[in-house]
Length: 42
Picture 1 (cartoon, rainbow, N blue to C red):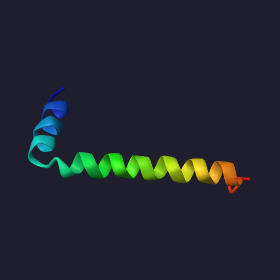
Picture 2 (tube, rainbow, N blue to C red):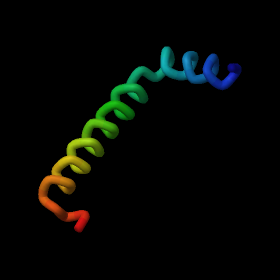
Picture 3 (cartoon, rainbow, N blue to C red):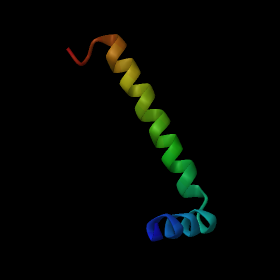
């Protein structure tokens, strides 16, 4: 649980980390969906 406290402290000091993480996840999800629908994955 100490890791979660450290993470919480880090996020309070650097909220940009949350934004970058969420943006990265969103972009990854979009690319994954596009690749799936385009049939790039075979």
